[in-house]
Length: 313
Image 1 (cartoon, rainbow, N blue to C red):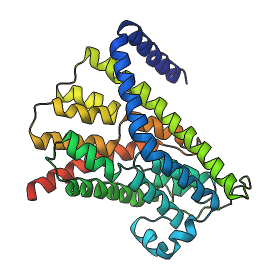
Image 2: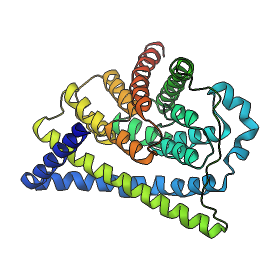
Image 3: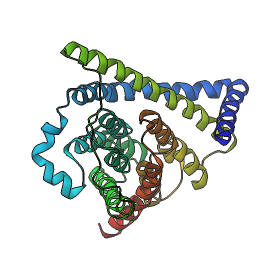
């Protein structure tokens, strides 16, 4: 606990000092972070946050996905409600998969075992992010969108199978768990469902904006003394904050295949900022230790798949 307090103290003092000594650079970083939040995250994520919140509270998710129950069980070993978290994470991107998983667990739709298993692979980059930001803007079209998306999806699936059959199976995570429906406040009218979902959506999106702002300033602070024009420096800033790291990929004078490897690794891992966002959105009852290990493993698998596909295609 003391180590955590020390870390956050250093984190805050470093940023305060940077803001006071280099106000222009700090202001620029803050504007970039808030611009990303205002123009990208709010229009794309907030509607999904509100709509998924309504679906979770109405308890209709399992019924909607029940016809494909056997498919979810065979392919991923999850329930129809868990499949909903996978689909949301796949379509909406970081960190919606983890947020939906936590909501389903708190609402009593899935067990704790399934929720912690889902966290190992449910957080994914959205197809829109991969196509527009990663492939077109950051990689200048050097890697086709379909190839990149396929690599990321297959690496997520392989990570899920590793935890499903090796890690969680050995720890008896898939034992039969006593399932008790949690007591949740009764909301009767459609207007009440909408009001609660809107307020929860704005609370979540505001929290994400705060994390983006802080990590944008921290990334600028580190770059002030350690310019990321080398691969180690680039990896440092990229692991710290994904979008900033991917954008700075354009500054590196490297072969396209090397840039592709770096981009695939960072996108599959998500970075420290997304990990912090995930921890803040997931209930404290769920552990994220397997999530962290899974994202690192996912990055390694994605790079291996990228090299394999690049050499044979």
